[in-house]
Image 1: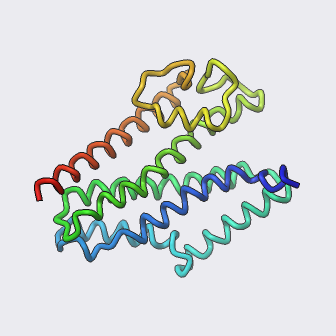
Image 2: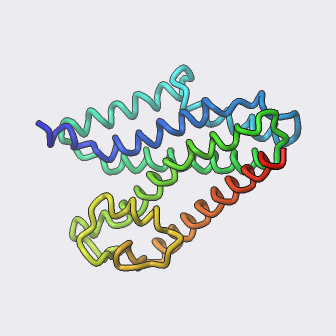
Length: 213
């Protein structure tokens, strides 16, 4: 019974990231942003995010039903590899929009200087879960005995191994944290590092701004 409950564990974990995406979108109060061309761009991004993070929106309601169906399908013991990938790709698109939003907030005149910091806090779990899933997904075929592993470890990796890979991305590849063996894995690691450094820069910039003001 317990094994059946944890069958859709992948969907549960992705849904945690989705919960933070919903929180990110709800907290993005554009009334705290001064009028500008950047604010107009933020409003357009917000509309896209709200369309599938808000269950009161038709697309959001469909997306919520889609998630629930994925969970039920997994509880029934059915394979949903393709649909799970679709779920993760949609979430990844939302994460890119959220990353763009935070960078736009940095160059926007804000009435509430704490807004960006709160959004950064909500975005960190998304980064950790998102890139962990992508690392895990790259090795999916090798776990089934099909092909070579895209990321190799000194011992058999667990799901937490990919989480640790994401958290230690600014450190050089090691057998402990996983070595990227393919160009796709290396490109993902570079993107992961860029996002982490971007978040660090945004946090530092806003913290300095708060001290100055």
